[in-house]
Length: 133
Image: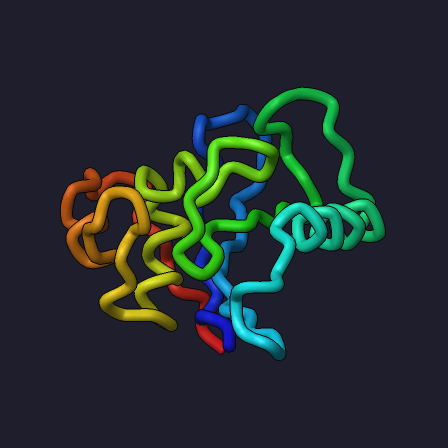
């Protein structure tokens, strides 16, 4: 299942950088969450980025594709990578808005707050704009 697509301006703003298109996908796998390997899933996401021509010349550089692992079965971990839940997801409206589309009531595994509460805490600047279609 995936959210609708949203258009947002880059954060932080970069001169000449195009708007980003953001969305969230909910992935399910056979066998439930106990046997899922977050590092393996993140490596698969990075392989998709590489195939799409993603380059990493500097942090937050404009990119052709950016796939992140936000949360996984309520797992909390600091190491080894990836850190879960994503350490900045709760601060990013461009993550939370599409997440609220597909999983209303989702609770942040560390903060214990719903996606709606987290959205209410964020400023109304750079609101994601739904892309018709």
